[in-house]
Image 1: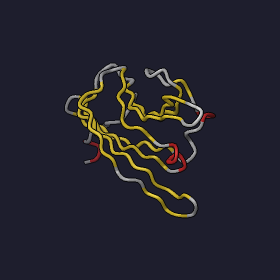
Image 2 (image 1 turned 120 degrees about the vertical axis):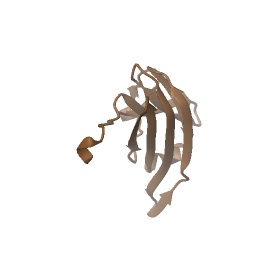
Image 3 (image 1 turned 60 degrees about the vertical axis):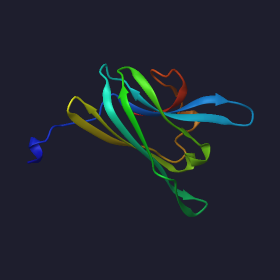
Image 4 (image 1 turned 90 degrees about the vertical axis):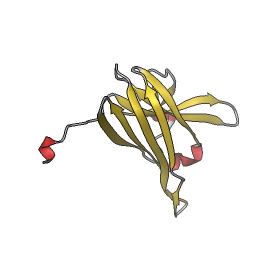
Length: 134
């Protein structure tokens, strides 16, 4: 039975946390979906949440849901702003999308303290500094 299911492995799709702006008093961060494929992805659904331990207590953020009709090939879409205070938590993004009639899904998790300058790269397509999970 399982051998009859299609292998819908997510490839060439990334979630990235990008540093948008920086001033003396604060930094502005956004989370993006990056489509590195040549083809568009459609009916994109993303849920996001943060969870973990902070100051010895379990912490959970609200679950947010985002719908994006289409992300063209070699393009990106803004998912949400993200607060630096959540960088000490697991930040989870669960992505589902269609290519044609096939559905794909994958969970992306930014581990605590992984969104730091030491891990920055120049994000493809966005051309901004940030951290990316493929």
